[in-house]
Length: 440
Ligand code: ASP
Image 1 (cartoon, rainbow, N blue to C red):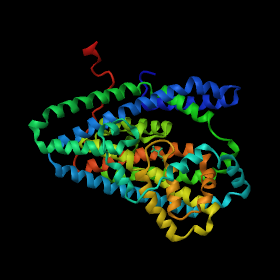
Image 2 (spheres, helix red, strand yellow):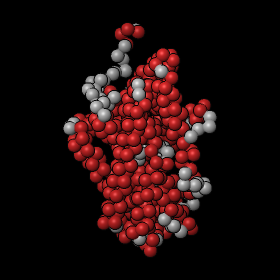
Image 3 (cartoon, helix red, strand yellow):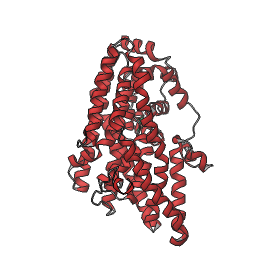
């Protein structure tokens, strides 16, 4: 396996994992075997990636901001990034809405299927916990309040508080610029060095990626739902996947138009991050790899990537918002056709945009926010458990696909922003053992 490119190794791991998982579903005790002996390998890998996410954001963002030398450059990059993120998300939601309205996947769902899904999932703890999680009373500006930490160390100790970490880090980076080079020098040196070291940790962890994705996919297969139920939801899932594929096509077009790069080259360089996004269903866990690929393999300068990517992982979720639009309308087609008004669809655009900003970059987060989208358009509360039961069975595979789009969207925007401020250069690939000879 030595000379094979990383994305091939990961792909082989995934295919073997799927095959293995499939075989194990047919073997007596197979699921338990995968649970006990295979799944931990995947879990450890995801933990390792999450372990370095916060140190990486800290080091990389501070390096990025303090390299700028001037705050106006930072606000320039910041405003462009936010603007482009909002535009791509609205495009994603619109694609979703058009597809679901034209194809109408909800019309093929019989009452018997609804009854069967309700019976299987409405009381499921997974469904209930999503409703409870979404049900916390939130004012419209709550997401801003939640972005500001009141204890930096608490924020650093909680992966779910990534936006708080980013907030603190940006404040620290800007203050370092303001105190001047001399006073900030020791801190800058420390964070620069931390940044190099953490990126090396990514290289080391990635050595185990092909084995880890094997384990992650085998686990997905053995925990998948009843194939009969999955089959009945095929048209809904098909609309989401079609929308996601169109979205990837849109990114490639954007890459061609704005950066004049070959889209296949872009896909090849970013593919390990995409494959991990697919295997882990978490843009946050994938972030260290996305950052490494975008900086070293796509040639985006750290000044841009260190801001665009961590912020994007938490607030830019084009795949998730597209899914929310399709799921909300699909649910209405089946359970609440009278709610399918133009004004409700416009409301979906707005709430899905806000929801994708507020969704955590972890598996299944999009479904929690879907509850908020449904509540915003006045969906009957008593039907909520049935609504979630309806789409629950296919949520995991769709989560895997939408996370790929979320990550690809962040990488695309990083390329465009970098190009627009003259920070798209030549790739500088670093291997895990670059300095091995010196330290041997
Ligand atoms: N799993 C997605 C992500 O991490 C969020 C979601 O759509 O549930 O990007």
